[in-house]
Length: 268
Ligand code: HEM
Image (tube, rainbow, N blue to C red; front, side):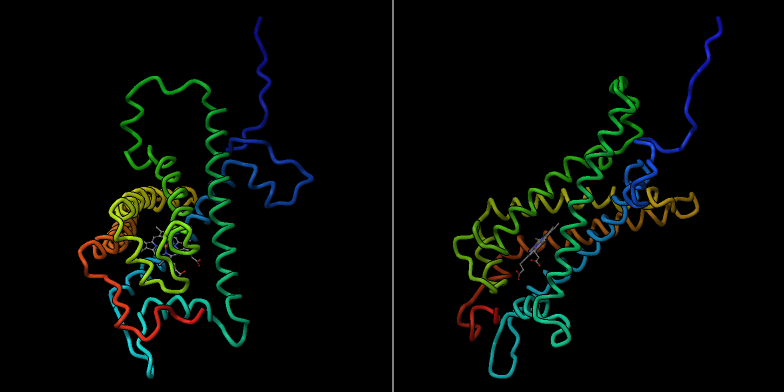
């Protein structure tokens, strides 16, 4: 006897079918395509942050500058500049806190979308890939996204405890970024941790930058070469710029000298 297949309409997306009651964005986020958009947009915010942050880190190479009668490390002035953004239109640190909140929301959404996409994929393919052939399709970076992501997330927590809150840095002085960098990265295991975490970040950024075009629907064979160049460029610039800092500290190129400055830290 012929069996009738009782299939629903083909929606083109995996995941929970959109319900009518929820607001559009919540509804959209419940689909696999919505989660991929969120991964891509929050990923772009993250890339923007790491690029700006890396440029800020390079200010460590500018050493001491003179401001009136004061001699201060340039990177400490940069920290103060961030706290003073849009003053006097806005009270001090408000803009910085606004940016921090956007970044925290982006990181949390990125992690949530990644987790729920993994759950959706598992539901769609309850039996694991059986053949090693499948692994040839996915490259090293794409297969390691989860692990590089976890390493970067754990690194951020350590990094905040080390250079922002100071719990993990016994010689920490608030507002003295240059001094704290030297104190932290002169510890060889810590320098190695920074190097490993930044290489993991580079691998994550390489695949992330490449695949966000796919997620946003901007993929075309015409600019795939250009896309690859961008992914390699972003990852290389971040890794080289950031890894150079612990290397420069260990080599003595970045070295805090209390006699070179009039104050150890910029105003808090
Ligand atoms: C060798 C590489 C890095 C160096 C030398 C470095 C240096 C610093 C320093 C000195 C601060 C404290 C700034 C201050 O409070 O005045 C800081 C804050 C921070 N860093 Fe990094 N960083 C590095 C890599 C990274 C990476 C890879 C990430 C993220 C993926 C990251 C995320 C952050 C965040 C979220 C903050 C807190 C920003 C804020 O409080 O406004 N850093 N970093």
